Image 1: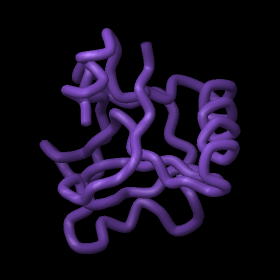
Image 2: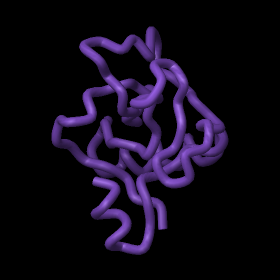
Image 3: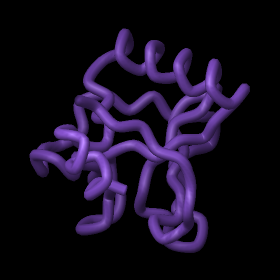
Image 4: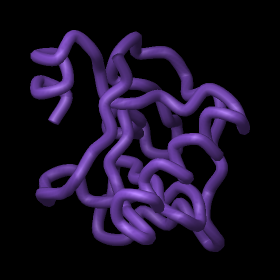
Length: 100
């Protein structure tokens, strides 16, 4: 997914603040009704320590959906939908948001 974003001159979206979170939630809801869409946030290296793929810095803003993150079956990637962020399986196919 991130390679596809790089091909467009960008990267998987990084949610930096509440305004960007609301904007991305609005866009994904407008496209799909609810989402979810993968972001560029992960905790693959250390469970519970979420960072961004693009610059490897600690994620600045994490507006989790209720009862998330739960690491259900080793969920290390983060997706965004109508109700906020959710941790999800990295290997599953799905939609994603590129930031250019």
